[in-house]
Image 1 (tube, chains in turn red, blue):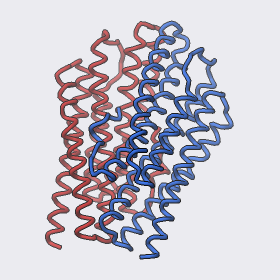
Image 2 (cartoon, one colour):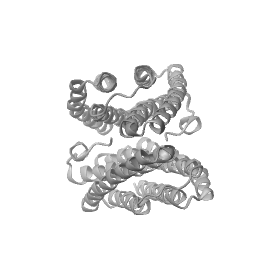
Image 3 (cartoon, helix red, strand yellow):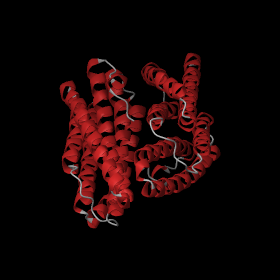
Length: 220
Length: 220
């Protein structure tokens, strides 16, 4: 049992590493969009393989622990939750990679004159990611609840951003291509926030035994 | 052990039901877009709760089986795979729900004159969904491989559709709003295909012991 505790700690450490890698990818990909930084976009894309490898390592470790330790109750629920959270984290990494591709594509067009604060939106989403992971590992339902509130703010920013981009495209048809790319940037950021929200809802479920997954909001 | 076999069958049946519900939602939501059918869109949105309930039931059943049966090796891997596939199915349901919302929104604008065959794209994606689920339950790696091939076709259709919608918006700025909605329709369909691809890659992994998840394509 002592050995099991050590392996659980190893798993938590890996999950935090995974979270850190995804957070870094997200941060860099948004900077690549805002600063039109091709090197940063390239770095994000190069880093994707490491995130994918980590996802597989975590899945393997969970499966190994399930097989060898035959955990019950609390530990079992923790391990099955890690499987779901690991999927969320990997998808967030994919979405950051998508942002890096959008950054590269956007460099082919002149910058659009818009008042969209992508940095703010991104720091909100980054903080949701870290909070939801932290909430999971500390089983802190209160912290998880804060993630749900941030998600409402992210959705509001997204709505305003869409409106601005669409109005700009209507007045400037030559900017339609770049505008569509930007819509996807905003969309990816929002979806990363949705994955953090998923994770947070899972924490609340674990802590309170209440499944809030389908009472707060949908993902689409 | 006999009891365990019965419960596994019950789980498989539920998973197939879930797949059927998601497939129906997908089919209806695309018809709602194409035929501008508000009633169908409404039906899809009303059906979302049942899909969410089924997701929770399947998760609960898996957890119960893990706790009570302490399965090993093959059964264990099957159960952890069901958790991941269940998540994919629920997300596909969310995406179908998103399509229904786009259908409702698109009815506010005059129809765009475009040559995008959403019905074809949708039937490809529906078939990917059913094949990947079938491949999972029959552990049929060959069938799963076919899903990966269809995904390439879906991606090609998506690329052509984007090009057409963007060109139309450039020439008809008044249609930008409806064009953006349509881009999201195409995007949601492609993403539903991506989730089917995820499931198929999981099947190949189980069958062959080869993790193809991160060698074929990314999700974004």
